[in-house]
Image 1 (cartoon, rainbow, N blue to C red):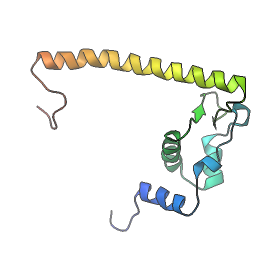
Image 2: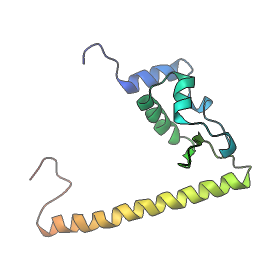
Image 3: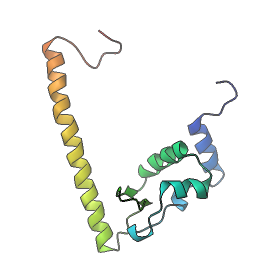
Image 4: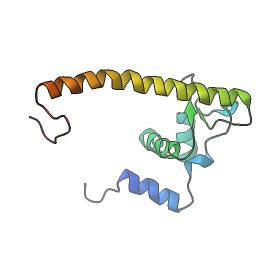
Length: 123
């Protein structure tokens, strides 16, 4: 819509003014903070926070163990945090495999029917 700032532009403008979501995410699982608390501390909406967290995860590991404690940067000086990061990576690798293996079957079925799934638009 005219006159409305795009979300990424807004987040970028915040960063240009010195805002960095990483300043609000604690190090160490023992210090985890919920997304609701992060929103409260930063003034960002939940959707904006999700986007900010996604961008930050491209720079540094940020974990949420889905245990209600919230987000944290693993402290690589703490053995338990190193183990948590290792476990998380293994879990995500397994999740990727469990998604891509059936997807390959679907792609093969399309190829068998002469359909190129990479083409834009519907057949």
